[in-house]
Image (cartoon, rainbow, N blue to C red; front, side, top):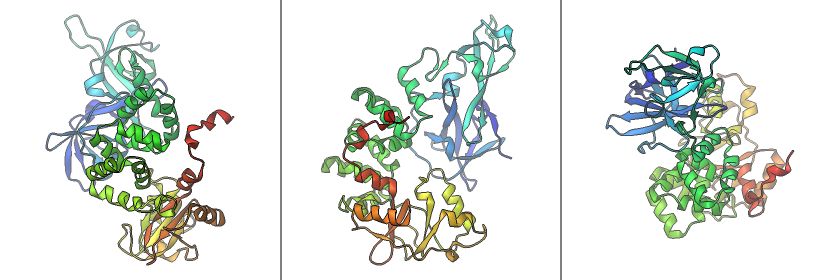
Length: 421
């Protein structure tokens, strides 16, 4: 049975397995974010068999067993691990650090410097791993370690986003971002002077920075990306949705865009290049080539599992597109779609091929933004299929991407939040 509570020290040294049971490496540390309101584990530092250390987000972890950790998928980012502002390594930064406590149940420890021995992680209902308790000890005069006491994190003082000791303003701000929506993080960054904005953006992990960039005005996206070294910029582009990456590259000079595309993984750059070939005022330039695409033999239960994937945007999870193989865009023959509401009303064992919506028209890559807007308004949808002349699925257009392009230029520069409430 998978653990729901574990001390970080126990994880260090555990074997990391892929979903098929193959050994990937060993856990060496746990990266956490320390905040006064909510502290949580961000991911694991994993040493691969070739001794390279990489970062594995906690969302990529399926189970934690007594002697091993198993991943959701075998896909990992092979970039070497680098500590960033707002992130603290348990074994390297916290264990051995001095703090103090005001825990009323341990009066003997109050007013004394105590040393962190370990931290406990607990899985929450939202499937996040939060820092719940801290194990501490008091060193004797000869340096001997005394009894270990486990304290609630809320009673431990002297910890900040930068670990134990004085707070780092940038680290505190980055830690604050962990509980904010990407659009709000983008707005917060835009309020900072450019130099500090670029510095803090560079400290975000690749996935978060990709998501935040997508919420910025396109000229600011280009400025932030240009402030990164060229290899990091290419990695961040790989993490972006292809349509967002294509929009961003369209703001850069042709030479720089070509260099970045060349540095990207070919599997990631190919759909971006395809989107950049369409006119910017057409549906083709708006679509994502990565909606949920399944075959007619898929069960309702399997389809719902795809819809529940937290990495799939809510708009894209509202509809399943059904095709004949291959499923990669451009796909085999498009057969129809299944709405999420329909899936919720069908037996889990039913095949989605028998509940297709065969009447919904599709969009064409050459359709205008206005045509797409009328399409969504007519059929009360938030996402729609885009086909080529041979009835192959090329991708899907989501209403949020459409709104992003039909709103006036510079709409992101206006902070409408101040006018609400």
